[in-house]
Image (cartoon, rainbow, N blue to C red; front, side, top):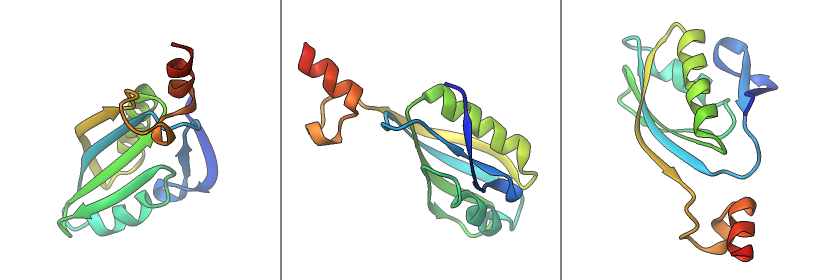
Length: 119
């Protein structure tokens, strides 16, 4: 997947990632920032599509959940964030989940549902 960008603000006022429709990958991660910079980084991260800041210590760590249709796309987006925002020291994934079709049908991606229906 080629990482696309939306016109809205992202880190440091730049564009934010825009992912394909149909969430299939969910990643939880810890974002390590420069000391005292977590609140300002959290504000910038909130502008990124499909990324939710779910907690933080108020100083240098944030907990995020990021959804995408591509694990590779998420990996690239995380790398771009670290390279493009001098206040972010690193992003450390703590869990990753993929749609395996075991949930309710309405929660499955269209592609997964099609495979199940054809099988």
